Image (cartoon, rainbow, N blue to C red; front, side, top):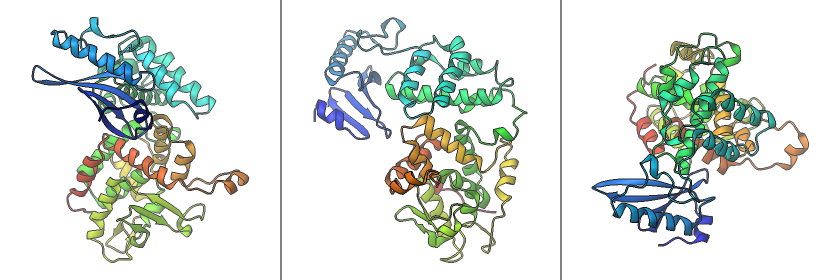
Length: 401
């Protein structure tokens, strides 16, 4: 069915076909972009036509028609430096600095002034001079490493935050149709010298490093590794994970209900579980010692000690990060990589509202929105594929301590 302007405006996450290869893609965060899919010389080609926020349906159809005509004549309009812009309306491939500013304008709504200033100024000072004028679709891991090398050891915390922001820009560019494929910058850190001065101020792992850690935890599963993985999926506190018992979980509904006496604020908290979290828990449910037993335990009787996860993190040799710091990793990711309101992320962390008047009026627990947020977080941790994450988690070999 052909699209209409109204259908475009109301479209929910998914992919919609207008006909003749023109597609509308809507991400889980609500970002909409146009794409033209064409079979040419036996190959499938996907061409980004820009954001639906500033390219109308009619303009997307016109641009798609022009592209089809060019390709029919034997001219591959996109993929050549001289044919980057099909019309003056759709300047398809911006430079890195242009894409970064557009990303900043889109994501920064709701940020405080300090975060806004630090986010863009760090890129202006340390990144734009080196890769700012590069077309966004040409920026690769080698360029990013080259931009970070001069500051990686001099200002390590800032350098790690800049890496996260570059990753945000590249992901945003992919959503906008300016880059054909999603980009993983996990390997960039492997090509840079080890930062040895991470002290107590650097206890939170940058969220860009979290997917690699999840891969390591899955590759060699143990009770403590799986407990840490569930902690990261849920952004829960260590004691909430270590002392969790089966009566708290409804795996069919995907809900974890933590009683008030186990919460720091002494207020009951419900946690929507992502697909990978449910898959992990189902593995333990099948091997449980009893319906009221601890989920993670030593010999089925004793909970993991408060130092178990900390020692594990140290043994993994990932840096001077703390287990509690993963809550900050989640917060930074939610603030910089999603459009979810801060209140939703705060509720996911079971933070109390300091203003008693505001707390009295805010009765909702944002459960539905928190469910979407936690699913998006799990997708990010697993390279954007929740289905793959669920399969990998459920197929993990038998756990050992």
